[in-house]
Length: 550
Image 1: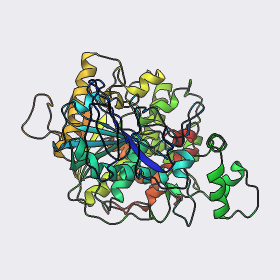
Image 2: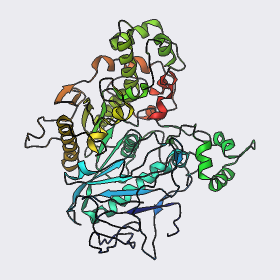
Image 3: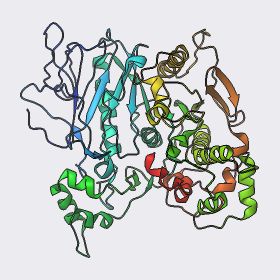
């Protein structure tokens, strides 16, 4: 095998042979069903015919920016897309040589065809996950004549170890930007339209996409789909002092300078580093460079945004909770607001807004799930939508409510409570579930058509009206709060959760925590409010660990 440096992004392809002329102009060996060979893009690629889809795959350290691979003197076979970035997920997994860009095209895609390109950023809380084929099978999407790109990016301490007064911050986000730059330069050689690139992501991937939207100075994409994750959620923090991690990597001096710390990082074993830091929560940070304290003011008149959540986002967190009757709700609600005292009147208002007049088991579980979903997802979504509308963007909002056999997380975790939880819609976008129920397949068709229409036209239900999508989904406005409910039927509604959303200022005013990125978003000026800090929920019982799962 070729000796690969750890700070380069590489790409591979699975499909018929390509002959590409790209800025990187690298040698690629390819195999197809008839044994012919081709050359290709940013890194050495190998191509082979595989079930009407193709995959472009690829590599990286905690303190280095990834770069396009410069050149190979010999062809490099890059057929294996199973490589993932170092992470702790039921044990230590992954390799530091992990950066991948996977490209899936329709079988008939040709250079110059100008197909819409959808770049997907996986979730996993910034500490686990990958862009591999087994996780994001592209069949459902590419049959609508679009190109799908998935990305590996550095995770945990390798992607989010922030070192002050250096450029060694937010490496995972920078990996994503490198992949977007590659796509902008090269996707046309695979039949994609360099002027029609849609960035979309789920959970942490959605947060990433939102950050890139806020700081998109290079016009690497022109549409965004945000699925269950906002930059206004409590996932972006001030940089944790690097001294915090020094003892965990064998440094015990009282005065640890940055240069020595970086030198130590470069020499430490990957497994040791991951194991010794597995209890920390690593997030993108405000570093003053890649992410500044206040996003730049911008006019988004030419940006289309689709944004949404599931109706029971935090349901999956309670899979191991056997009894909700044991909760001391009043105590938990008081603990939910840091540095503050919540009086009985405020708690009663919260209970009333969530329909909890009596603390029976079912209603208590519903309140807990809805309250957590609002603080961590719905409130940030409302805040982001209002900011983007104020910036003149076109915004489409949805709520995914359908409960079927392709609900990804519910089926994985054997959850029976009604509703759709965090990640459930992924089973209808990607071919990763086995159900072939008629109603499930209808939802697959609806979602994939909505998403790919948005990619093609910037409008999920463009004219003329089609029986395949029996609804006209118009953009939301501050006045209408219009949204599409995706359930057994597609229905246009207004709200959502009007009574609960009225609690936004009630909950916000108690928190004095000002360390989170959500507080740096300019107030859209639509209503007076104190900065939102959903991180308050991290202190509740048993919700205190929910931040890590996002």
